[in-house]
Structures are given as structure tokens and as C-alpha cells.
Image (cartoon, rainbow, N blue to C red; front, side):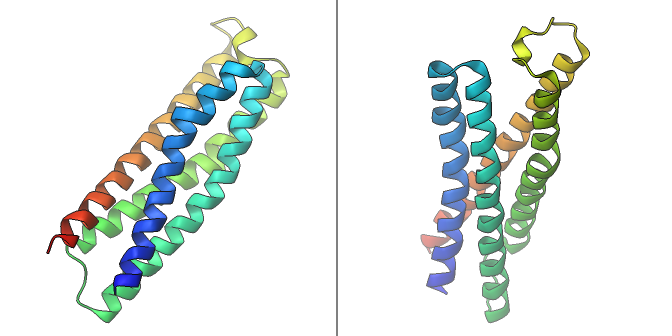
Length: 158
């Protein structure tokens, strides 16, 4: 049981840590030292690859939770934990399979930095909405990761 809890906690830590690192280190650093086009390409590719890591982390967490529940007893707040991981995965899938692909296609179609477009350009507005939605989904996923780590830490006290 301890090995399963550790595997789940480690997967959540990788998932959450990656989100924090991309948002607070990779993206700002890329835009500080690279051209806008190159920075956007780097961050986009980083996110694309990180989504694969996130899908793997979700699979590990879900598998660990289901095995723990099957071996019994179920972890405390099992339903909340399961719902949180599923919500995190849905947000990550939406970001990785839908939003990021639309952003990449839009950037390719524009063939110039989005910031070079006039503020009222429909493509720039669409990009802004997609980017904002992506950011909200990442924040939502990070909050879910913090909740899962909190629940695990709370349980380790007993």
C-alpha cells in the first residue's frame, strides 16, 4: 500500500511540478531571451511534450488509486481524489488535444508574431481567448494537484 501511495504522490508531484516550472520558469525565460516566434515555438513544444508526461502521470495516479481501493480499505476521501484526478485529466486533455493544437494552427496560419497583429484582428482575439483558456485549465490542474498532495499529507499523519 505504501508503494502505491508513493507512486501516486510522485506522479502528482511530477505533474504539478511540471506545470509550475513551465509557467514560472520556462515561459518567462523563453520570452525574455528569444524572439517572440522562437519563444512561442519553444513553449508550445514544451507544453506538447509535457502533456504526454501529464497523461502518464494521470494513468499512474488512477491505477494506484484503483489498486488501493481494490485491495482495501479505500483511501479517505476516495471519491474526491478520484474526481479531482479525472477533472485534472480532462482539463489536460482539452488543453493538449484541442486548445494547444488550435493555437499552433492559428500561429502557423498567421506566420508572424501574434503581437504584430492589430488589437482588433479576429485572429489575435481568438488567440487571446485560447491562450487565456489554456492558462485557466493549467491553473485548475495545478490547484487539483495541490489538493491531492494536501489530502495525501493529511492522511500520512494518521
